[in-house]
Length: 117
Image (cartoon, rainbow, N blue to C red; front, side):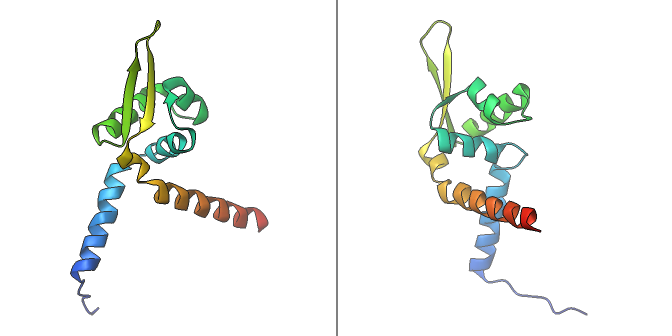
């Protein structure tokens, strides 16, 4: 029989923090959208759509609404004809910078290891 491991409060809080982050960034596309906005500042809907291969417009719209609801993305409607809508990261969204950079760096390293094999 395995011995039960007792978790410290700090460990429990960190595990909960990871779960909260996973919940906010859940889905296939949210981190790609955040990364695209992080590296490109303000972007219009179709710019985001063009830069993320395989992302359907309906899904992009839903993901942007979720990110806006969670205060990670700001939607600005420009008073132009036709109407222009821009998306950008909020300060809270920008605070994901170390997460996005760490994921990008890890992904590049991992991909290179696969290519080198």
